[in-house]
Image (cartoon, rainbow, N blue to C red; front, side, top):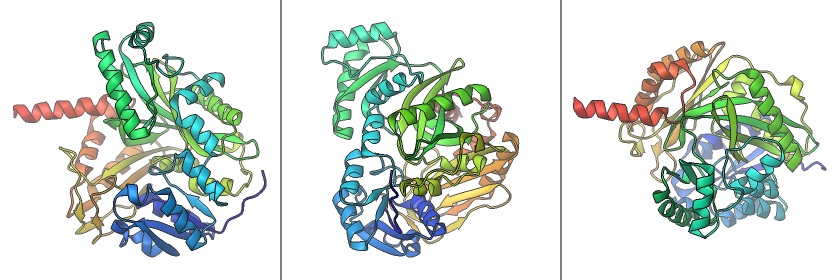
Length: 458
């Protein structure tokens, strides 16, 4: 593919990821334009960008999720490329297509790749063709006939998981434990899928008992190179939302990871994938089962950066310009262990959002500590968006060293004016099961139930 040079990038996102992208652009001598809502007009990223363009009111649907407003901002500011970050429009194939049709560079995979991998049915089929193991389930979209759906569920074996083909972020899925629950679960999930993802298609797969969530980071160019950059364990989740992520996944044989990583890279070459992406797997009983691919930059990319030494965002920008990767798979190595804790503006017990003015903000430092954040003391956390306000990443020569550094850093992290989930993160970090490594995706929900029961009996 020919080069697609650009010198000015519009960042169509907010918060810590907008600042992360802005810094990578600056280091590559690229000019930055920040598209922001009215609610983010006073954000630090606005002041740091070379230009800033207000794209609408606070409501995301009228600003960060408004393709026309973003494209207009890009044209008006003279931007030649758009970086969507994560969330919002980052995995919207129509938006990616509209960006390219406007003569701009979409910093991400092609619209065709997003469509293939964004539809979980199509993605599963593509992975099966590439030899990537998948969770047993329906061969395609579930039919409308309830009897036919029941027959598929019987063949797979209960419990089963009903999932939206276009779902993501933990939405559009229901566990069904018995035949009598199936019809209602399918009907409810189909309505939710249509409303949330504008796609009523569902599929069904075996519900695994106590799996772990393990993922493979990939990086690909347009010149036939597809690399995998190690693995991550993201099993500490609440309501299917990740809370803690680490690299590498503890307790899994490196030879097994290498085999599945090579298959992921081969799958990328097969579909002509460009840019960064993440293959997500459930891991149980020594086996990997593909569940989906995220065709974007991940929130947890810093732990991979820490262990590989690769600036993933800079690599993403270079690939988008049409450059060939200067690395081969043999060049990719990992060093030590890294762990990331997502710091949210929320009540650590009830998990209600905690918007408001931050009166104190003293992030930690020290050897092996990185804090990705866009906020400073005096900032106001708006109530309109995801509560993520910072990510604390600890890196050490060993997992134990990384955990020790993380605990010290979390204890030092001082925030006032709003509530955060730091007490919950410390509780997780000090728990023996977590410290031993290899917890399942049910771990945190189970621990929260135990904590609630203990508080109720006190």
